[in-house]
Length: 240
Image 1 (spheres, rainbow, N blue to C red):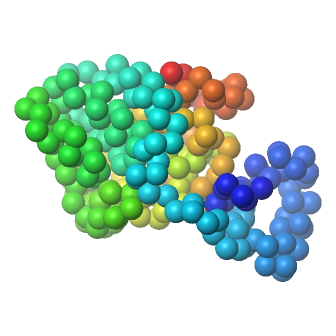
Image 2: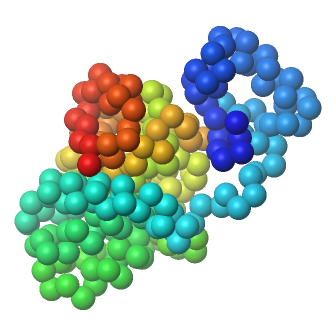
């Protein structure tokens, strides 16, 4: 089950194995003793990280590119001229940024690829957060990034996310989680953009509960059960 996943939460394990939580917990204890996996809060991770699974911006940019393009076009239609918009890092949000290029906006971002795509546009006012630059993710993170975000406010944040389950939105990078939580805090509206592959796999660190989002934009391959899950939490779901 871990061949293509870096983390599995208890909810997913119980569902995929059709087993009770207590049974799954006992099996995880045995597998940890055998050094097959390592128990962490809320689930388990492989004892050795999967080969060639290190997330980076270049790799993610080519994954599910058609779905991301459709998501980006639909998301851009939700943004009005004159708004202040936070754009989180990640390839899906970068696709949204390209669709916003014709609008008159104030953009706040911690993403170098997004800044590079918008820097020459006179209709876009651009603010960069500063902070530690992660060379793989190509985003600025950490205390300085969060401190600057604390001094700002925005009409909307458009955010990619690592993982979505019934437990909420999550990620596997603590620095990313810190900046995402601050972005949610200072924005009047939260739009999450995520293709269907981000659903059902729990991240190691929680970002926010499902009801922290106002809108989730995904693709039409998203299973109806996940649409219902979000709707129950008061989230509007749009499928591109």
